[in-house]
Every structure is written in structure tokens, then in C-alpha cells.
View 1 (tube, rainbow, N blue to C red):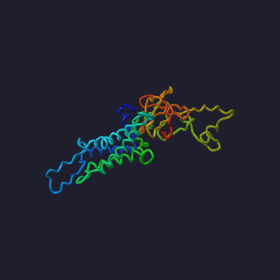
View 2: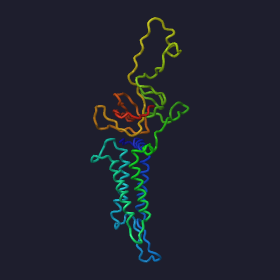
View 3: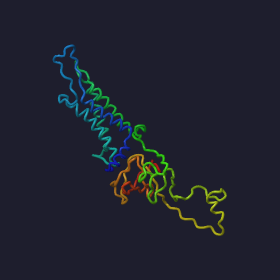
View 4: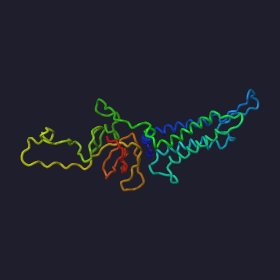
Length: 297
């Protein structure tokens, strides 16, 4: 996880729509814990009618830890998993897996609790809202990995921004393809170069009969053909990742040196097979092993 404030802000873009529902359900659970858990029907007489307890009442134990706290802790684990490097586990399970298991437990406890009660006792507002929140929490936690609509980014990856009249982008500098360029970096967004192409060289057919740039250059030439400059094997380019992905050390160490977050642009400086050597905004370099779905700038 990137510790800078800017990195944390960009890391929030790794949250999905399902995570947004999880956060909302956790807030609803917290509010419901302070509302009446049971409602008593005392008829017309209010003398001797007990006060309606909330989830924090000690006499209702274990309602608080098994329904309200279990659901809130489950939501925290699911969201926290988005800020951890991929592959990190606790006792063989990821944080999101522990959170999903807790959501099912909290929903199970809510269902059996609301089926209980007795004469002149009915579920209170807090118990009903707690059941709704836990059912929604469990459903979203189980469906998010399998539903594209819930797996979509909560905030989305920003698209290309219109340049200013003076030629500089609204956010010039490292991490923005339309801003100030570093030596060896490609041009602004949209000027894509394929692998093996040399920046600045024309692409496409070079037949002189087609009247292209090569034809114009070859017209005045006589005698032996001039040797062509060798093409570079790799041209640096900007790219963005669809989800948070770890960046491993160039020495092959299994420990991530940084984490690439959606919503920002990184510079690919080299290629190693299917992997890319990327450079972060603070100058750190590492190997991005999973390059599927990256967006080139």
C-alpha cells in the first residue's frame, strides 16, 4: 500500500460498486444498533411496561457481537482487502474471505433472532434494519466476485482530459500522459506506439508508389540504398491498471516493492517477456507481472 496521501487517494479508486454497498450496509448496521431491538405491546396501560432495549443492552447478549459487530467487522475486512497486496492471507484465507464468512454468520444470526420473541414482544426497528443490512451485506459479499456490475470500479478510471489552450494538460507532470514529459517518455495521450516501434518514425506502408513519406524521401535518391536505422526493441509508454496490482522487485524478490493503483498513469520503461518494468511517481522501479487489461496511454 502506498503510504503517501496522494497514493491513498488513488488507492480508493480500487474500490468496487459492491464495496460501496458493503460500506453503506455497515453504516446502517451501526445506526440500527442504537435503535429499539424489541417492541413491547403493553396495551392501554403503560405502567410497568419495560423500556425498549437497543442492541447495546447487556441483557440482550450476544445480540451485539453476533449481529451488529460481526456485520461491521465483516465490512471492514472486505474493504481493507482492497488496500492489501494480492496474495496476502491470514491463516490461509484472504481478508475478503474472512469478511464474507462473517457476513453469512451475521445474516444467519439475524434471521434466527427475528424468528424468536414471545407473547406481547415484537421485533423493533433496530432488529428489522439489522436483518436487512446483514442480508444485503452477505448477498453483495457473495455476488461481487461473480457479478460484473458489482465488480466495476466505484469511482471509475478517468478518461483523457481536454488540453488547455496553451498546450499543457490540466494536470501536467509525472503520471499524466498529456503533461510534462520525461526523457524517453512517449507523447501525449492518443499517440500510442506499438511494441518494437521507434517513437517519431512513420507507421504503415512505405511503398514509394503509394506516395507516402518513404516515396517522397526515396525519389531524389540514386545509387545504392541507404542503410536504415535499427528499430528499438521497446518504446516507453504510459499505462494504467484496471485494479490494484503489486509491483515486484527487479531482482526477482517475491515481496512487492509498491502497489499500482487505478486512476493514475505509470511509465513502462522496459519489457521482460509478458511482464513490464514500471516506474512509480516517486521513482521506484519494479516488475508488473500481471499486465492483463492495462490501458495504454
